[in-house]
Length: 466
Ligand code: UD1
Ligand code: MG
Image (cartoon, rainbow, N blue to C red; front, side):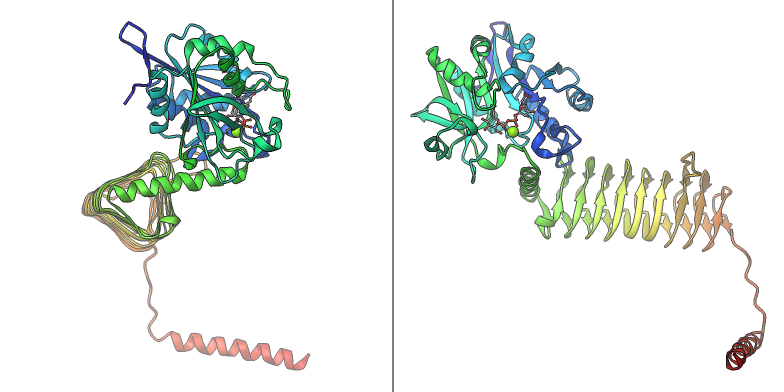
């Protein structure tokens, strides 16, 4: 397989990726920049950055729009070394690439252009561009055949050559019948890009500088322009919320396939939703209707029952979770932990073999191993200002309906009586009663009933008189 990069002679293969992310995304009808809309829990621009990194980029340039600091922050989070260029006026994709001129002016290697609204492109597709460039192409455009080509630029081809890309608004009736369209992913030899970028004009239906015009200009220069064809599912461009939903569905299907191939049982795949970074071990079983937010890592042999919502949590081997559990905020669950129905765990560390079977909230807690958390146990971790820690040892028995008012500590082997409000530390092996003592009054029940009946009779006689 051909390598993507051209060797610059010093033994170091150079590849610059330019990510175009400055568009306003008008068709999204959103207050948020289009490229920040997430797919699989990651903003689209993040997917583009990950694709650029996976392609082996030696440098990354991102073109962003004015006021899009949040886009810049997302890029910096994933690729701190990426250079960011501002496009203050959205004059088109060709103009956007010009904004990053400093990054490619002297590029001796290859340049990859990725549109920030094309989040699902695979490493294979990007590698196929490299193969063509290494084989002598000056520009390679990734095409695809969508169910409906409306809105995309059409590829005008002859054999393996690409003659031009015609944008929807500029295409003739005949050109609009072409089903092969531009994905927006393109590879250039650095020198070719530098040579054609300034020749791009804006005499077209939108009055924009189209990067896609580089194809015709390069052909006029007798340069070699080729195309490859990618599977439609991975190069869908997201311009509106319908396409966003399509891309999300496609992303989810890919993840489901990956996990099933890797030894995960999904009882009803279509109802299970993953994030871009979900990690799951072998022989894990996931029942219907489970959502994985970002940051979930699951070890082997875990069972996740229906209707669980997990985010930012590491789950140890053989744990059983749910149904109806919510776990989040940097939680760590040890091996064989059991969380049952209606249990919420936030930012808590729970040791091996500990069980919380029913109706509990465990927030900011550090809990040892083989401890039993009774039904209805609540950590009162927040006083309206501060979040405090509840520390519970090993082999503790927390009685049902215990309120643990943090900060508070329960020693190893301690026991709390059901219904207790625990405000003071409980030493190891102590039993804490934090509730009023029960008083029984022998023979009092019949008297109580007599009183109640008398009260009812009095009410009825008042009614009769009125
Ligand atoms: C573009 C292509 C079209 C292709 C389609 C694939 C052009 C002229 N057309 O159309 O051939 O079929 O993508 O999805 O390139 N952007 C900027 N600055 C701008 C304009 C756009 O950074 O001034 C960015 C956007 O943020 C976006 C990307 O470039 O990530 C593509 O722009 P968009 O407006 O979505 O182009 P399309 O109409 O989809
Ligand atoms: Mg687009």
